[in-house]
Amino acid sequence: MRVIFMGTPDFAVPSLQTLLNAKNLEVVAVVTQPDRPVGRKRVLTPTPVKVGAEKHSLPVLQPERLRRPESVEAIRALQPDLIVTAAYGQILPKSVLDLPRLGCINIHASLLPKYRGGAPIHYAVMNGDDVTGVTIMYMAEGLDTGDMISKIEVPIEDSDTTGTMFDKLSLAGAKLLEETLPDLLAGRVQPVPQNDAEAVYSPNISREQERIDWSKPAEQLWNLVRALHPRPGAYTLWNGEVLKIWTCAKPAESEQVPDGVQPGTVLEAGERGIAVAAGQGVLRITELQPAGKKAMDAAAFARSGQLAPGTVLGTSGD
Image (cartoon, rainbow, N blue to C red; front, side):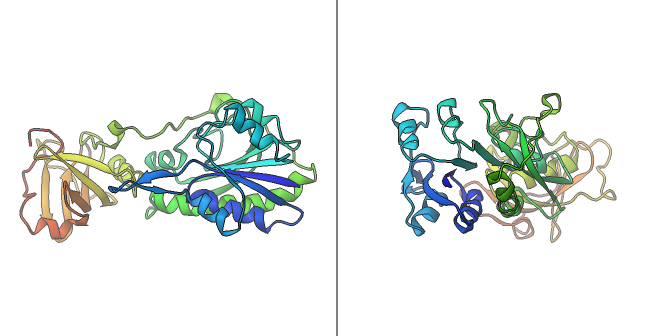
């Protein structure tokens, strides 16, 4: 069986390894996003999948636009029996979907039809879900609308962030692929159509979503901070500048906001971090990053006295 793998970030690397380990499969090429400038020095950097492919001397294709005729023809020339994708980053056009005789399958980091789209892990954590998972599905022209082949559930713990769930789901997806391949290749799978009425979408995170709205409940803000860690990060405004909030303690029911205190007001700054009034409850910041500085322990920052009780966060005129 000739297989083409399409993927880009670290999430996809274990699934590529699963295909390389599989019997009776030949990974004839890897398709990934073009090298991009990274960091302040804008160093041209290959994708993690490209790095993994080159370790195994696999041919690598990096089309800027997969739907261009020359890109489609390059894939057609490889005569794939199956295309497997995982967080590739481009929608496959029908001209590519129709190429492999066994179809195109995608390893998607959610329990479809929940969280179709580009940021399923972020939204699962942001919404305070107790469980998420991975779905392997046949690809269709719509956004993550194809028939489902297999699923696996993965719990979300209080200590989890999008970063830790990214790693857990990456490994779970690779394991699910390993378990699914034999039946898929033998034609024994029984795909299940998605119920479009139950679909929930997870578009890419916007800059506005990153900003903390202190009028919201503390638990909702705690989930937001976890969801945006390690990137892009939640933030508030302080002295007219961005103050990144990297980690917080889970809000305690015993901590309540005194009557008449404005949301965003610093209630306490000490060894237990920086406690801020929310619309309901208190959010205790444990790690933050002032503009132009490195991330630091909130208790250490509190010792500087710069975020004294009574300071109000979240407005440009702080």
